Length: 325
Image (cartoon, rainbow, N blue to C red; front, side, top):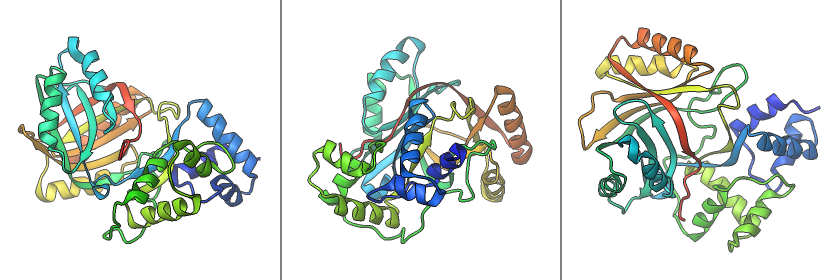
């Protein structure tokens, strides 16, 4: 009988890009393709699996991606959320407690003036002020949630290795492949054939699979895997914590924070256009508000520096960026 927990753990790490990916998973887990497909379908229907799709390196695809924070007066929040969520480059959008109350990630083609676009968006949604946070160092990127209260596997960044300093031309074949990879993988024997047919994209499955695995090898696609709904896994409390630190103190803090299971994302960011004194960003998850408090206190005991905590109050959007659309 298929172990659901083992399957969830496996597909959060990687789903193989082959003609019959569920059969490949079944072979490694000692079960049948039919059972894997049915189990994944059930997990989706039960709201545990959000999607199975590609996670891409925006920069290598020719995009600029940054975290953006708006301070929007409460009466304008609903309108602001509607406008922001409509953008295909917005993948995450949250209401958080604090002066900056709307936080979202935005990816734009590199030829687009990022700050001018955000300035215009801020005017549209009546934001009082805003800031853009550019990642200058990614220390940890591993939002994988497991039953043992861990939110990462042994690899704190990417699940694939390859010649990530190399790149490949972003031609029509690559663009068409990315468009398909960013769609949720269907629960069928040949799901990539199904996605290609649904997309009316002029590409055959063998070319698609070869291109997709090349994107993975070269690091344009960071991983192809399942994303679960962390609330469904019991992680109902989270906060984005930001910390003051520089020089050797920052280096030591990052090394210790990277080993904390409760931290899923860990960055050093630069802010513009407004001053900001907290360059270290650590996203923290817990199974209760009390547990979250304890984790943040532990982090403070490690960092021993000033910090702020922006708790997530409401999720407005969480989905893949729609590149090339």
